[in-house]
Amino acid sequence: MSVPHLWQRLRNEAVTTSRIHRPLLLVGCTLLIALPFLVGLGFGPAWVRVLDFVLLYILLALGLNIVVGFAGLLDLGYVAFFGVGAYVYALLASPHLTSHFPAIAALFPAGLHGPLWLLLPLGALVAGVFGILLGAPTLRLRGDYLAIVTLGFGEIIRIFLNNLYQPVNITNGAQGITQIDGLRVGPLALDRGLDLFGLRFSSLHLHYYLFLALAMLVVFISLRLQDSRIGRAWVAIREDEIAAKACGINTRNVKLAAFAMGASFGGIAGGLFAGFQEFVSPESFQLIDSIMILCMVVLGGMGHVPGVILGAVLLTVLPELFRFGAGPAQQWLFGRVVVEPEALRMLLFGLTLVVVMLLRPAGLWPEPRHRRELAQ
Amino acid sequence: MTPPLLEAVGISKRFGGVQALKAVSLTIREGEIYGLIGPNGAGKTTFFNVLTGLYPRDAGEVLFAGRPLPLGNPAAVNRAGVARTFQNIRLFAHMTALENVMVGRHGRTRAGMLGAVLRTATVRAEETAIRQRAEELLHYVGIGALAGSLAKHLSYGDQRRLEIARALATDPRLLALDEPAAGMNAAETAALGGIIRNLRDDGLAVLLIEHDVKLVMELCDRVAVLDYGEKLIEDIPGAVRRHPKVIEAYLGSAA
Ligand SMILES: Nc1ncnc2c1ncn2[C@@H]1O[C@H](COP(=O)(O)OP(=O)(O)OP(=O)(O)O)[C@@H](O)[C@H]1O
Ligand SMILES: [Mg+2]
Image (cartoon, rainbow over all chains, first blue to last red; front, side, top):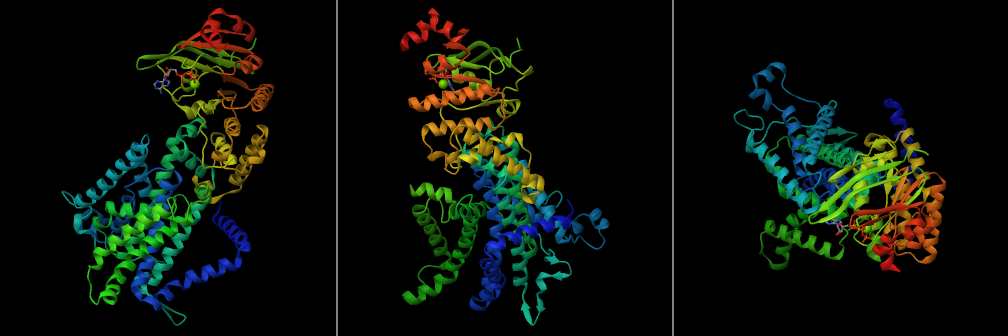
C-alpha cells in the first residue's frame, strides 16, 4: 500500500472520529498545543521540563501496558528496553564510537550523526529484538516467576551497560556517553529553540511537540492493537492461557509479539530521552525505574489506555509537586523545614500508592468491564 | 464404510502412581456422536487432554483424517480440526460472550500487528467476517441475545453453550465435549441434546463425555466405556447398556 494512500486512509478515519466529537477534539488539541505555554507562564520552565518527561513516561507506560495490561505478563525489567533505545541513539549520534574505534572513524570522517528518522525506528527495532530475546526464555513462566526473571534480565542489561567499556570501550561504563547530538527534526535543532510568529519556542517547548506527536502515535497504535485479532489473543492469554491454546492461538508467537511491541515503544522513548538529555548513563535505567513505570500502569488501570496515560501523568507530576511543594509548605506550617523535602517525597509517594490501591484496586481509571465487575 | 475420522491407538498416560490411561484405542467415524463414559476418575478427561495436546502422552498415536495429530501442541491440534470444551469451564471471564467466540476465530484468520495498526481493507473485511461468524454461532447455540455480556456473568448453562460456540468458531471437524450437561437442569439438558444433534446433522463428529447416562444413550451412535484407564467396550448404546462388565463397573453403581 502506497504512503499517500495510507495517509488518506488515516485522515479519513480522523475525519470520521472528529465528526462525532468535533468540538471536544478541537478544545483538546488547542489545549495540548497551548499547554507548554500555559504551564511555562503559570509555573516556570521547570514545569515545562516536567511536561516533557510526562510525555516520555506516557510512551513507556503505554509500552509496558501492552505486555502487562493487554497480555497479562508481569514484566519487572521493562526499563532495559528504554536503555537499549537510549544507547542506540547515543552510540550512533555521538563522538564516542568514532573516538574509540579508528575503523568507524575512517568510515565516518565527519563523525557519527545519525538522523532522528533513522535512529528512532532503529532504536525501536533493536529494543524489539531485545524484547523477543528476553521474552523467549520466559514463555513458560507466569506471575511471580516471570516477574523475577524479567527483573533479572533488566539488571543484566544495566550491568552490561555498566561494564562494556573494557577490553573494548563500547558503552563507556558508568561514566556514560556525553556529547550526544540534540534531537533534530529536518533542519530544526530542537535544543536551539525557535522564534516563530513573534513567539519564542524554547528548547523545552519544541521537545514537547515532538514528544507529543510520538505519544499520540503510540496511543493510536495501542488503541488499534487493542481492538484487533492480536489484541484479543493477548487478552485471551491473560484470561486463560490453556483455553487460548485450545482456541488455536499460538501463544508463543503472540506473547513474543507483545514483548516486541512493548519493548519497541520503550526503545522510541529511549532514543528521545538520549537526544533530549544529550547524555546517557546506566544510572537512568535501574530497577526502581521499571517499578515506577509498572506503578503507572497499575495505578492508572491495567489494559486501559486512558487510565495508563493518567497513571503516567500523576506519577510524574506528583513526585515533582512533593519536591517543589514540601519545603514551602513546611515553612508556612511550622516556620521552618522540619523534614527534608527529598525524604518526604518518597514517603508521600508511597502513601499515595497505598491509598489509591486500597480505595481503587483496579486502578484510578480502569477498563469499563473491570469497573462493572467491581461494582457488583 | 468410510475410513474413520479419528483413530487413537494405544494411548497411555501415567501420573505418578496412577495409570490414568492404559493403551486406550478407539476410532471415531465421520459425522457420528461418540460417547465416552465411565466412573469418576476413569481417565476420560485425561484422554481428552492427551488428545487435544494439553498433556504429553507416555505412549500412543492419533491419526486424524489420515494424518498424525500433532499431540503435545494444543494450538496445532485445534488447527488440525479438533476443538474441545472443558469440564471445569474455561472461558475468558472478562471478555464478552461475543469476544470469546471471536477469539475462537484466531487460528482461521490472519491479520497481524501491522495489519491491526494500518487496518487495511483486507483486515477490516476479515474483522467483519469474524464478528459475523461469532454472532451466528452465538445464535446457533441459543445465546445470541447475550453477546454483550461478560462471560463471567452468564449462567452456568449459558457458559457451557458459550464454550461450545467458541469451540465451533475454530471450524472443527471433531468437537470434543467434556461433560457439557453438568450443572444443567432438565430443560437445558434437552436443549443441549438438540444442539448436539444439529451439529451432527451439519456433518460434525462429536466426542461426548457425559455422566448423564440417559442423554448419552439417547444421543450417541456408539459408546465406549472407560474404567481405571482401560477401555472395557465400544459398541452401540443398546449393547453397552446390557454388557455385564459395564453394569458392574458403572451402571450398576448408578442404578
Ligand atoms: N494433572 C493430573 N495430575 C495427577 N493426576 C491426575 C491429573 N489429572 C488426572 N489425574 C488422575 O488421573 C485419573 C483419571 O482422572 P480423569 O480426570 O481423567 O478422570 P475422569 O474420568 O475425567 O473423571 P470425572 O468423571 O470425575 O471427571 C484420576 O485418578 C486422577 O486423579
Ligand atoms: Mg473428567
